[in-house]
Length: 231
Image (cartoon, rainbow, N blue to C red; front, side, top):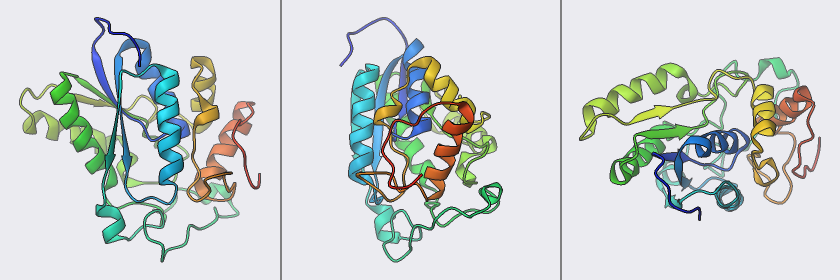
């Protein structure tokens, strides 16, 4: 993709979502970035892979590693991976989003993603792993909290050869609208990003992820460039 340089290397967990592409744009400012994307049996697996590949290409990533994990589809327990659990519409009262862990939570998912990203970072000699986790005005997932990443960094220190790889979460304390404004400033490729939990041709506009995204763009005073079935 991009040409070689003497900049430090970083691995970026790149889902292709709104927060993810902004995090990726931040990473590429100062690092030679290597994207890792996970297909784990989620409903929008093909669409997310396309978004992640396009974002990596547009942002000049050095390499793109696509990993498939069948564990989550096999064990179920999440509306994203279990066909017997419907993806619900967001609650009518948007303020209630994030008050409890929703059925779209995938059990302990980020631990698997981070472990793979850190493994690749060790091989690459990268000392930094980026992930676009967000705690503010989000769905309330337990693996998107600062304390979670602090604990994971402790695990890396004790469980890797050099112990000096760090997970960084540059967006974790930002509101979604602030992330949109930052992405606009950075030129993040929002037009190829995908956040919907169920739609693949057009975002549904009614799931929690779509509602949070639409609200963020509205509050930021920016136009969301992707198609929606409903807004």
